[in-house]
Length: 484
Image 1 (cartoon, one colour):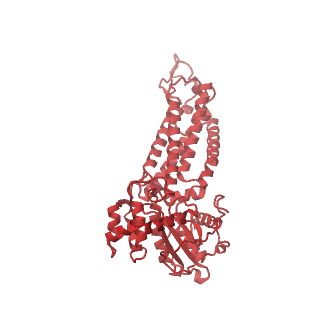
Image 2: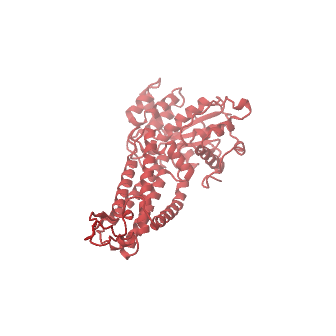
Image 3: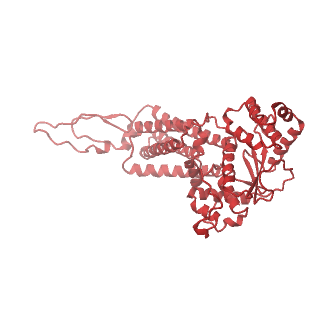
């Protein structure tokens, strides 16, 4: 480090001459200070940077890496929105190589709940902060002004990127999934840190510039965070981590505590925030009376919480919701909830509200076959099997699963091709449009749009659908986007 070099003449090693150290020392711009007879004068960071006539490749490289990191984070955020709308991310190959599993992890859910930004949003904040500091650094170089504070800010940003990458990589490892775009982010953060160390010196910065650089970096982070907070608060949340739902019949504290209060008291801070937001969003959703005839319902018609679910057979979140719903049924009394299944295939070939089609026909065929199976006892078994084999479905496989019971393939194919089945599917689609569906799963609870969250629905069932029961609970204030 330059600041560790002595700034005074070395002691005499004899009476006839001075001995000078001649070993070159690295500077912050990659040059060398060469020894010469006489006192060794160490230049300040400002002098070294101002005197530097280094190639522009260094500053340009830092700017390019900042832009690349920002664009990758923005792409991840857009993919996250696709996933939250029921689609599939391009980086989700299978259960192991899956960005979705990482984005839906408990760690990612807590980040989003506590800060209002998803992890991808924080990647964008970091990338734009680095871009601002890089441009500030380049501008000061071109004007011949002091670069020390901007360079120190880049050093702080580079260190933050490395620390965040390590933390996120550890969280990803714990999920047992590999996120390819996350690996790209880690690589860009490492390359950025190497470039900054090469041209601005290693971390940590020293002297007054370190403080000024930290202030610049902090101000940039705050400004970008506030700008990103608006879309961040409107990005749909994932589940707040996996939750074991206790049996609703169990009592706490010798029966002195209600099951709902006992549940809330066991939640983590992130889960409490998630529940608070879900309650506020549900309260703000206006109830709409349905005039669509009920074709299939599991559970009593007078259940305290009556659910309607709109799903797509290839939607991974629909599969996850179905798994949570099965746990919900096991944990609650039989008369606590009822479930009415509806179809909303995300394929323009059979859904006029969807612009694109994947061309496979899987979504449309599965939706129609499930409608055909509604009068039979096989509906729920076939639905479960289709979601379980979601990643391997083809039209032939869909038909094979659907016809594995008493209803044979020929009868099912004729039913799927009938005008009556198509009319029922369009009725489901029209029903969903009343609630301005943006993706699947869409869940209605007692005529209101509800979070597709087993945690929230379990709590609502414990409250017997009464929102006033949440008023006295120890829940944090909802985020502004969730409040009515």
